[in-house]
Image (cartoon, rainbow, N blue to C red; front, side, top):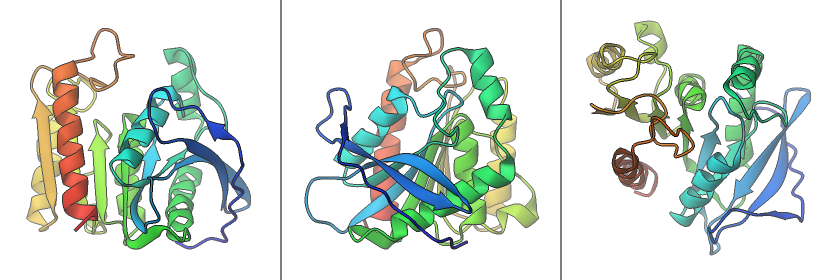
Length: 248
């Protein structure tokens, strides 16, 4: 899906906690709308592999920005997109409301346009673009692999899954799926069905289920469910997977 792209790079550097990489606000066209995002670039001239970074149901908050900065430090141009058009939730009720308010067709259009935006950047390797997301963003990360045939790598962190043969057949990207064994929304059985369906079609898929982890276990803001050791292992797996798929 190709769309007319417009990049408005602002000169304001956005603070990114303790990370060396700074993000810059950008805007890209998605149909007749403009989508705001934050672009993180590694040090050096490139060209670099790149990632579309998709936020949780909270919105484009500081934690997602930090993940994007970390990915840039690993050598990727990271585009943290805002599916909520500037809104960020500070409580679960608002987060659910914002998530339910995103039209599916608009979200998929935004994802495809984000891919096109990255592909238009002079310092991005056009044939080495992937996606990563968490929670709601993990589901949209899979959706991006379904709608963008040129996507190379895709990381799904406890996001919704598809098992329809007709749908999964559209995927060309290598998939890394990270899930919690205690997740009541996306159960281990759901994950295994997805893995089996992918393998049956000869797709490249790697799955890791952390037996004692629940949903959103990678985010320290999840006070009850954060599991630092599992989160650290998930990050190492992510870094290794992306290096093997996007840096080769």
